[in-house]
Amino acid sequence: MAVAVQDAVGQVVLPGDVLRLPAVAADAPLSLTTTSSPRTRVLCGPGLMRQAEDLQVTKCGLLRHREPALYWVDSHQKRYVPVKGDHVIGIVTMKSGDIFKLDVAGSDQASLSFLAFEGATKKNRPNVRVGDLVYGQFIVANKDMEPELACIDGSGKANGMGVFGQDGFMFKVSLGLVRKLLTPQNDIIQELMNVFPLELVIGMNGRIWVKARTIQQTLIVANILEACEYLTTAQRKQVFAKFSDNV
Image (cartoon, rainbow, N blue to C red; front, side, top):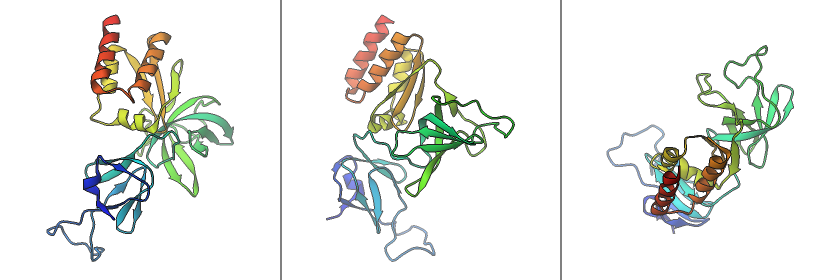
């Protein structure tokens, strides 16, 4: 039996559950493409797929919602599936002609053209070597094509993307923790930076790179971030207060 999607937000959903989308309000403007039972346009995140005019759950977890109409299932998952638009951390594994191959923690490697860097030309090639860390964005990601990354935005600017990672430490966490850290309402990162001045790069593929003033502080930050997945807000504040007193 289908359940209204707005009633299931924050609740545990299981694979196979069907979520009924809300109907368009009676005073909503009509469209030439409107069907006999119009629905609001929604965006399906991880764990959901469209089934006719409803949503079907494909993985177990908590149903989440973000305005205006984005729904996804928040679950403990470590295997990453590339999604167009996601910013990820990749590891350069090889160079094939004008294309770099990157390990992005998915089932397939992603390709990255040497021209997909700010200011790159055939004469001015970027200095990318095997083993380098690259922060980029997926411009192609579907089950029928090889994933493709770019290190420039729509205006041709790097906007923080590119080769990075000198002297820092990269570690892997669950995808649920990454989404938690990147939530706009979440203040974990700001609280942590108030204790330890640091550089931080977070990839949607479950990889985090961090660099603090010392190696010891870098490892402490990494351990704190991993623990934040299981700490309550009160416990987290106690941990930050303890380290703040010792710094």
